[in-house]
Image (tube, rainbow, N blue to C red; front, side, top):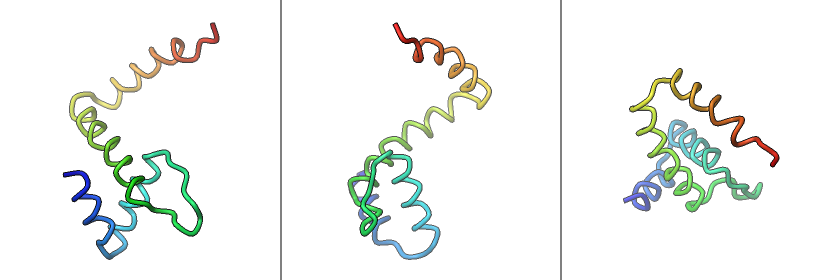
Length: 80
């Protein structure tokens, strides 16, 4: 299903679709080449991050997420 969604998004014209593609590539964290800034694999990677993120945002408020991030930060940033 993700591949079909990306296939359709990759071929969809318009600024809204282009903005969505740029967002997914940025979310994917992938580096791209200047002559090909958007690739189907980067769109799939971004979509695979976006879907759980949406579910997470449906379960927690922004304040709860900030609190969790602040709690996790010292543990994640330790240099033991």
